Image 1 (cartoon, rainbow, N blue to C red):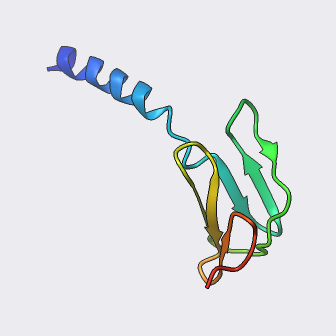
Image 2 (cartoon, one colour):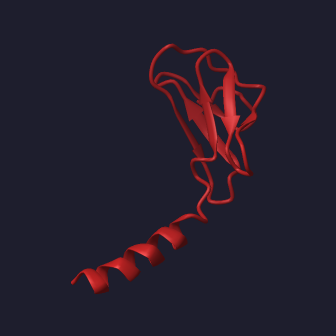
Length: 82
């Protein structure tokens, strides 16, 4: 069973590495990081200031779609979404 499972896990982990939905992180007080290429790069322009939970969603190419503090949702242009 281990001989069958090990190659499957290896192939699955290799295929999953090409997705970039979590490359952008917005958090804290106007802070952000991008993990797309190499070490994290600072992102400027965030409109969010929060001390608690937040979420950031990007598309499969790593382009920011929106981010939220759980109350307000901002789009990729950092404008409040209705």
